[in-house]
Structures are given as C-alpha cells and as structure tokens.
Image (cartoon, rainbow, N blue to C red; front, side, top):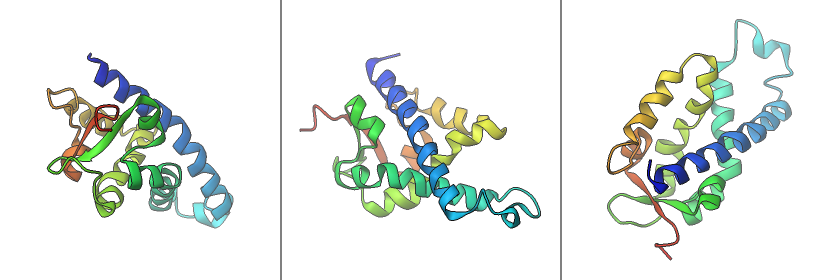
Amino acid sequence: MTTAVWRRVVATIVDFVLVPVIAMIVMLVSGVIENAEAWAGGFPWLRVFCLGVVGYLLVNGFLLWRHGQTLGKWLAKIKIVDQDSGQVPAFWKLIFLRAPFFPLLHATFIGYGYLLFIDLLVGLRRDRRCVHDWVSGTRVVDATEQQ
C-alpha cells in the first residue's frame, strides 16, 4: 500500500476510537442507553445510528466544515476536498452525504462488516476514492500540498 493509503488508514483508526467515545457520552446524556423504555421492542437502531452521526459531528464537525479534516485526518496530514473544485466540500455534503457513512465503521461489530469492506475496498483503486467519497463528490488529498 502507498503512503497515502496508510495515512488514510491511520486517520480512520483515530476517528474509529474517538468518535464512539463521544457518541457514547451523547447516548448516556440523552438517555438512549439508560432508559429502559428505549429498549422496549428491541434495540433502538435508528436512535443509536443518529446519535453516532451526532457524535461524529461533535468530534469532527468544525474541522470538516472549516478545513475538510476530521481529527484523524488532521493528525495524518490529509484532508477532504470537493472532487471538482478542490476546495473544502459544501457543509450540506459533509452532513447529509458523507457523515452517515461513519456509523458503518461501528456496524461491523454487529454483523454488517461487509458494508465497510465494500466501502474501503473501492478505496484501494488508483484514485483512492471510497464509496462515501463517490456519494459525496469528494476525494482525499495530502494536506501539506494544499497549503
């Protein structure tokens, strides 16, 4: 794998660890985990998914919006840019098209690992764009070359 791929893997690992910690705090504060009624009729998948997205945005939202980086991408010195313009993507793309993919990282623990595998496998192509990059019209670039 090239250096760019390794940097993207490192960024993913950092975000993979930090985001669920924040999401868990949000879930505890909101009562989705503590409240027994939340579990009536099964696991509250939609609420947990939405709170996972909220956790992702709490950790990475400002950096994404202003710099095109998550905390992990910032540490790995890579960033997200719009495929066409090369600028930081529009906020709505980051929120509605890109952010919902990241609870998929954690869905691997509950039996949906193939979704993450497909998303990341596509990212091993020459242009290194994963499915979430295609959907949101973004690409990942070296942040040190963009300054």
